Length: 437
Image (tube, rainbow, N blue to C red; front, side, top):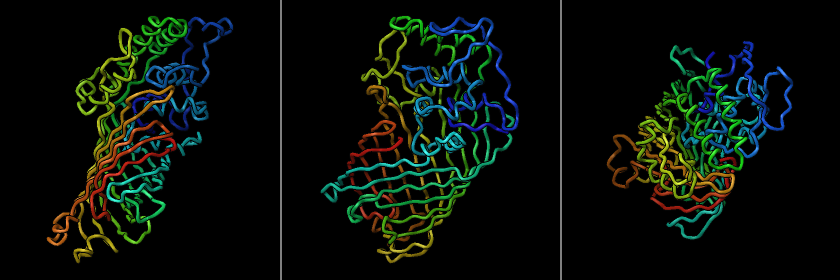
């Protein structure tokens, strides 16, 4: 039975789990000195609570702490752990809007946290350049794996399978006539997917070394130089385990598209292919030469986000996890009613090219939280559009959105362009509150 995961961090955890129906192998006890304040019986194996140590940062170090030191002993406890523990893993994913369905599969189960990914809900006030005055509304982005099935894969660190997924997204305004992005989409997708690379399973020696380094970090509390040295040693230990992760999927789709009043509507049936690559090792070429992340790496350096070798927090570190996900699809659009194409006197079915790209990357910290930039670009083009449709410029639509915000809470966004059913381009600024992002 293949293991399911979302990213290298999640893979590392899942790779340590026993396959369903099999007994878990017990990790060999590791003899290490006790953490000050702990009472450990002589000869007893060291045990560590399956929660995040208070004060640890939600970064590679704390995730590694949980995965390497506690992974084998906390499989069931992880599924029932505190929000703090789960937030550490979630906050390291840095996945874009069009993230791989592996994340959905990993979060689903009996641990009760799947709702965190099921829906992303934003309440907002927005103002468009065309409509002028501000308006109120909300947007939603729902994604859930309905059914999945694992397939065998002979390659190392490989996950392959089939997945049936329900997705829905859209923008709703209190006054429908003031909705600048009046497009709702509900889609059922059946995909064949594969993920390779990302992580290698840690050995008993890795865990032993990590236990020692963790104690060095704890004992160095208050001594910034020693803490920094321990962090650098931990990263050096973990880095060889991390590699480039490649994900792809090929899927068949069936979607219902409409405006929020359901007056304009149409069906779309088609196929899509998606590709995603993540370089989890910051020392890899894919990380160092991710030019798209350079501006955001500069923001992280200026804001003191990064932990830098040799002390300080102003180093320039592009992220290999910020490469965009790309999707290309071909749809057959039919059953259209009250759509802009009818203005051109055309109501026939047509073929449509659909492209999407998106990514997400951190830019700063505020307190214990992080700020992320999320970018999404969508493009739709009618193939062999009639001249009457081309004259009215209704044969193609493109839409760009950038969002600045944390995992949840207040956010700001800017959108430019138009979606199907929109007659003209518009620029929209929004300020709102988002749940779970």
